[in-house]
Image 1 (cartoon, rainbow, N blue to C red):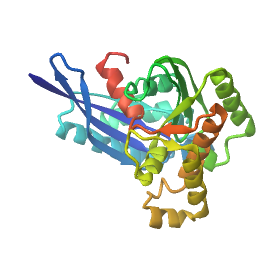
Image 2: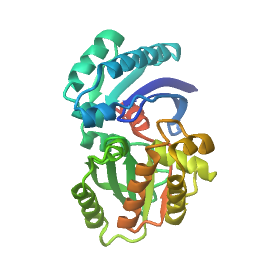
Image 3: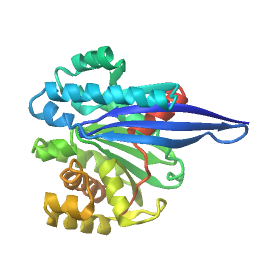
Image 4: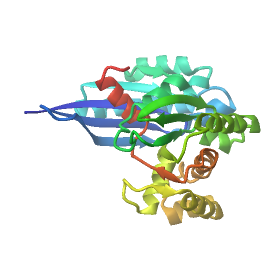
Length: 296
């Protein structure tokens, strides 16, 4: 007997907003399956407001309301029985972030929880990583967002330590990450990976997913540091317009992909990781699984 549940997660990030609808398949004596039914991404760059001016603009509040109304209707059409909406870095830092959540609750009937960096890292780390994480290996999991990057270290199959840093693609684009932040990340990575052999990196986030897709590799194969560096140099040699026309990147992806790869490359260098695996997971996946297993 198969039972199918439909859950959804809304991820309100600093570069884009996403609605993930997931089929949860339950079978007797079998592991629960999580299959993506739909993923809708709306390019509203809230971080541009939050990190430069300190508030979400009227224009973006209106766009958010429209997007949330659309998400609400889609969830109704898909017959979603349970959902959760999480807002991260941009909404955390905008002084009107809480006010915006109240407006959206009133206008679109969607309750948004603004989560801190620690909770964000924990939710992301609760994503389905067991197929990548072997008990005898050491892993550094890096999730690069628009406003923050979450780092989690796994050893002996368990998460050892996790931390969120205010360093993300939209911040980097606006020259808002000073050298001290980079030094803190370097120190954290080197301190926590000291004495660990053969660190393997796992990367998540839209930019590393796109880079991986362009590589044409099978999902279970990693990218090497050398390959990632050559892709970074290639993307960097193209203009913003060329990245859109020749690589088929979205307009809101073509600029942030360079700073994103900078973070992954530095993390690989500082942890001495030669390979990076790119499973298709992120905050939305973690939210659905955390809801299902009552961890949220």
